[in-house]
Image 1: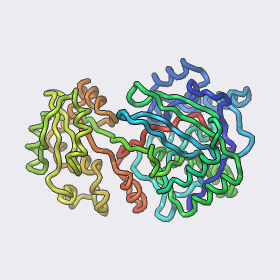
Image 2 (image 1 turned 90 degrees about the vertical axis):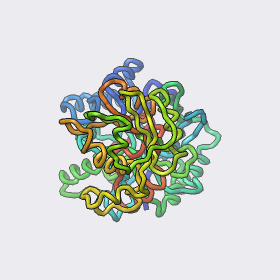
Image 3 (image 1 turned 120 degrees about the horizontal axis):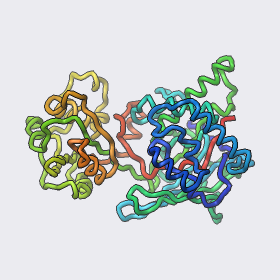
Image 4 (image 1 turned 45 degrees about the vertical axis):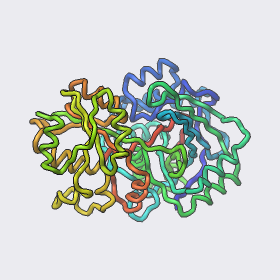
Length: 445
């Protein structure tokens, strides 16, 4: 079972925290940091983003400065620790494609487990190694979880969040914050309630018996917690007391069946291609790709993105900015990766893994069709935009020669592959919206 616990969180005491919170550190640039601090010098980015962008570790003094700011804010009352342990009910209200959603979850501590085949905490995709050192240096300096790991769990009746929110019923949220939505026009409203009631906490813990947790976002944060625990244990004779704070990580947990949980696609744009065009790609595929009806331009990639699910399994969008031409394609075989064997990268992969669009794009389209025919002297390089308009903008910038639109990865695949201990390719999922950073901080002392 997943072992969840309350925490006496460190929080801003203000009820309106719009100027104090931020999106997660890994989506922010140095310019973003300056913008948030210009709005309020006490914004959480002053601590949580010592080095931007956080793709690798920065100089040690930056993390030491973040720790000094953290301690100063605690001593002066900018941040305060709650008097008693609690679970924190968390609700995000947002709009997407004209529809209004509410996603509910809870902040809590989760006992750390190794990410192996016998545990109840499962990663779902591969990660990059460099960002882990940045998070580890920050954890060493601050001794706190400044932002949560985002986890999912099975709960068809939404009994967990239903129980917790019932305990918070008829109370105004303790804190509210608004952050810009992905479309740049609307807002994501985050509301938080503290639930210190022992009976309510025990009820939620009981409901979590026999449940597994699937890491949706925050793989780097979780593995950093494992590394930090290992360091502390080594300094203390090889082990830590069972209830030592370093044995736990801060999570926000959301049920997979929550009506406000949506998964958006992560598209690709590719650089270092030569001679690329939609017609040339089809020719290079040698009949392994079929062109689907219709044609689009860069300005209409949003329409193509919405059309892809109607075309069915593995339908993808291809954009050539040089000719401002886009098309929809689909592999001619239902299991296109099977034809690539023998391939060391595909050895042992399950049928469910081979059906991932991100796996098909990487190994079938990129490595088998594109790379042999279109790559220049430099290796193929790509970026990962989330919106169709970003694909158009990046391709038209001149840096990228092609854009690739994908359908969202199904939630069932996250569960199925997690249970099978198979990792998806990097950037396979985008759970929207991101949780706000700064509303709940977990001290590790």
